[in-house]
Length: 270
Length: 103
Image 1 (cartoon, chains in turn purple, brown):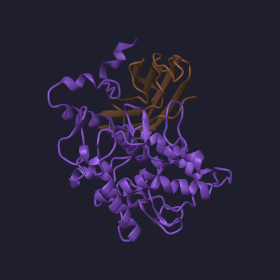
Image 2 (tube, helix red, strand yellow; image 1 turned 45 degrees about the vertical axis):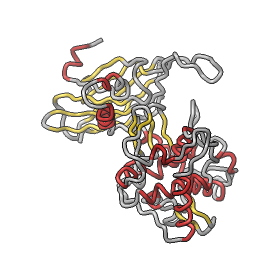
Image 3 (tube, rainbow over the protein chains, first blue to last red; image 1 turned 120 degrees about the vertical axis):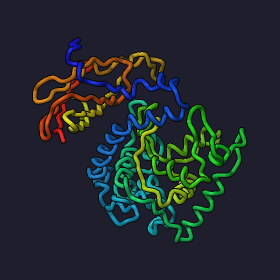
């Protein structure tokens, strides 16, 4: 190996070696913050955004049309800033929808794809990357830097928020857990991770505005539906249906709590 | 041919900082799939960065480097508008080269 060339170069193999650094001075969460800082410029979610943009603009589904006519709430085809106002009530479907359920609507109505083909395996895995996941990356990326502004004007929106709030503190399952068991007080942790307290506006904003995100430990971009699905799994709740009413209501509750914060996704998580 | 890289290069006080985000599976060869079969090793082996055709960094990558590797390095010199090119080779012989301008 030609070592002389390395003389003026400094390597930062950020994704490879953070575990050993965690033993150094400072608390574990300081080290995690340092690690996040180190990798913040190199978010592989950008690749998902690129793929998502291509998919958005390319004719697809049995109807061979693109999603460029898809109305995400700000008019047909408007992607910029759309995520910062979701979930919202949609008159055509007569219900409150989050980004992912709305994408399902567009993919079924515009492109003619069968709903079950989208919702059967909506999350990525080994050698498998569903289109909807990349579309999510693209759409949320177009709201980066936009202030969260989720409305509660429509009665259905208000209703979704209220139900979401209840679900958040609804205790059930073999462990008698609610979301609020871990996310309702300060200084709760799961393993080494500090958990956001959703009763605290700052925490609620910071958490919501950095999801969806690229998960380094999984080497994959993860959507908000995935986030909720995995939270419910850890609570030992039954697996929710993809883009179901329960998950939309919960999203509504969390999104409204994040209002006025600047959206900063796709995020980068350990 | 592999998937494109994202390269950003900027100069500050005579030192150019280059940030490279590569797309690669970086399989270690130690992982098993759902059927219990080993997933064959597939990772970048060599990385080379050039500034105006002159090599400024050469490195060997192995299985310890994560999926979608992110590499940051600095070198003395460079000027706005000049070209940085980064290329990698993996253990299957696949290769990818991308370019960026220093800003």
